[in-house]
Image 1 (tube, rainbow, N blue to C red):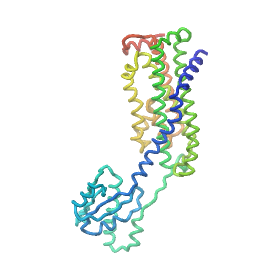
Image 2: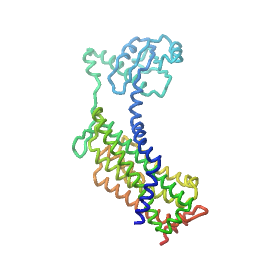
Image 3: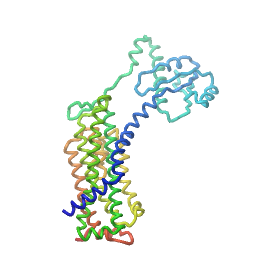
Image 4: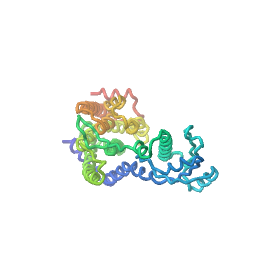
Length: 405
């Protein structure tokens, strides 16, 4: 009963804050912007580029005007340039994005020089390389006596439709939809773990600073206080997730009606997996924040201790995007079972590939068991640490607190 009273108190303490309402409304907006950013940048990167060409052969420049049909190509406006000096002058005036210098022996040396205002424009480089390769291929094939119609058929591009196979059945799911879903889930998971952990930390520090804990200890046990704080803040997180779920379902149904490539089979099972890992990860990491808050006196001291902890949370979030392309290699499989990285990596595997229910279950059980162990250890330290003042306790002192009955 006392635990529930503290839980309601902590829940109200969180949800009545203006920042809670603001973050509940604005977080989906920022997540959507973050998820849509690659798509927006992709659209912007497809703008037309101005390419100057010095071509003594007269053959490359003509074929460079013809798109190859490759998906990653961008439109090029081809301009004939007579000299490097003229090209550099136009680049200085921003009338050219790049200057391509073609040697007379290009068909044998297969080497060209590309001068660019922005050497980071990899899409433009890729487009130019693809078109030049097609020109040289056409030249070689033409020398073999092939007609133009045959050349067009040989060099025609191929459109690839990507579909997912799960348990022997084809699912209507694309790379774009899987990547977008994982990005949204991972951002929400990361923000939830960091955000609510920080809330718990501040609540504990406030209670210590204003001696609220001494009043609480007179009417409830340390375990009840610990559980109440953990559950109260956790329920606030559930309320936000439910609100985001309603927005997410509506947004998803709207998106697939206009963008079929974002159709995702099994959305709700994946969302359930996300919820389970969110709650498991919340209790796992929140106990760390509670422990830190109970053994320090100020937020400054807490931030020093939280450095390594923040790395533990941030590293799997960052690594998951680096290792995104190969969800079933052994590194990701190991990380999917390690409790402190499993919420990100097993969720990734569940979205991108086809782990069995047993694999997901084992990963969840390991995270929940570690969470229970962390709650038990943290509650022991919390019981003594909340009344502790003075210098920060050493590791041996913390261990002695854990062993106390």
